Amino acid sequence: MKKITFIIATLLIFCSFTSETKVVVVPSGEKLVYSGSYNMSGLMTQLAQVTMSTETVSTAKNTYLHLNCELATFSKWDKFFKIRDIYESYVNPSTLKPSLYKRSIDEGGYTKKEKYTFKGTQVTSVVKKRNQAETSKTFTIGGSTQDVVSLLYKVRTLDFSKMKSGDTKSFTIVFDEKQIPVTLKYMGNEKVNAGNLGEKVCYKLSIGAKTNVLKGTDKNLIWLTADSKKVPALMKFSIPVGTGQLVLASATGI
Image (cartoon, rainbow, N blue to C red; front, side):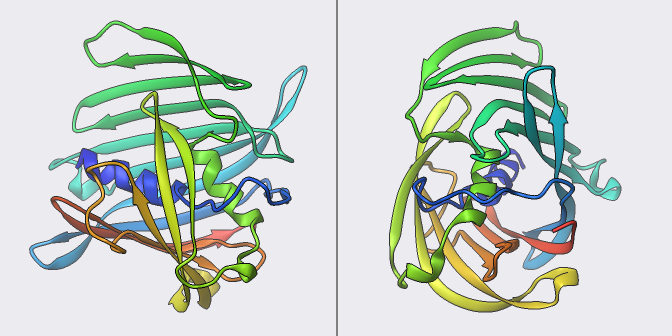
């Protein structure tokens, strides 16, 4: 189940082709709700809900866009394996460059909290795992490396009209205090159901990463609505222990 949680985060975030595209402001007050399912004995079974939301947060010196992603198993599954995870990023509203990333996970009794503070290409991390002392370290990242949450929203500023089926792009995210190379492949357009938005033509993307968590070629996929919003409508994942998906249930404030 921990691998499933990582994949959900991966599919919600590994969605950027380039950092050179002009950024369009992501709306504050948006809320996307997904139903998460996992293949159990040949049946795709709904196990969890993923909620993504945005809001404006101001301090004495700066104004940030708070990007929030929450994952929770449905109550009837909690007795088998309870998950309550929160991923957060505080970014510049115009450039979407992160200043602070926070992660709090509770998975079957295993807990972990992380906080990354970004200053240029330097990241200072503070990590607290269950029954372990808090640790802190500073490490260097690339100039275009972002946290896993802020990267999702950047995809919605990109122009896919110049992409051809089979085109790929590579980039890097920081996760678990490591930089992870990721390759995305554009696979053309398909119609999928997008919850309360109805049936939508979507950009279909294949995700590849240098990790043993993802399994198969073109088995980890995400569909983004082929419009100015580029809302993630459907996500499918394949891991060593099975397959699953996230389906958009509702989108408001877009």
